[in-house]
Amino acid sequence: MLRQSARGFILDAMRRTVSVLLCIAMAAISFGQSARSAAPNEQAADTGRTGTLVVLVTWDDVDTTPTAGAYVEAHRVSEKSFILKMVKPGRYEAALPPGVYDVFVSEGISTPRCRRALVTAGNTGYWRLMLEHDEVYLDRSGARPSK
Image (cartoon, rainbow, N blue to C red; front, side, top):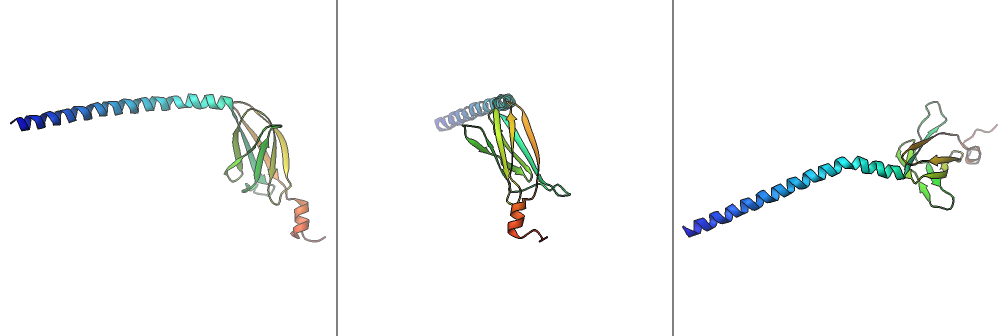
């Protein structure tokens, strides 16, 4: 009989331990959810320190076809440059510290383009750019019909 009561005591202790652990887990999950609900405020605070630059790049054709594979770089004088990532064809973007940037766009057969852009904290700036085919490239490659 002592054996069964010891076993019962152990089982009862295990149940209590599991119950306490479940309560701790539930509290941790609840705390984690409230931390997540605060995340947009934290994200807004991060956004307050940076701005977003979006460069929308298309070809000058009838369909204004979005480009894929363009090289887009934003450079601040006496600071490092940032390469904008292609999010989808024709859309290149990056989160940048506030400031004035020289934005350079190059694509294999287009005329390279550059423009100055102002990035402000918490805002998104856009540059809509239509690429033109590069005359030098077309003449040299033989892609242009002779006159």
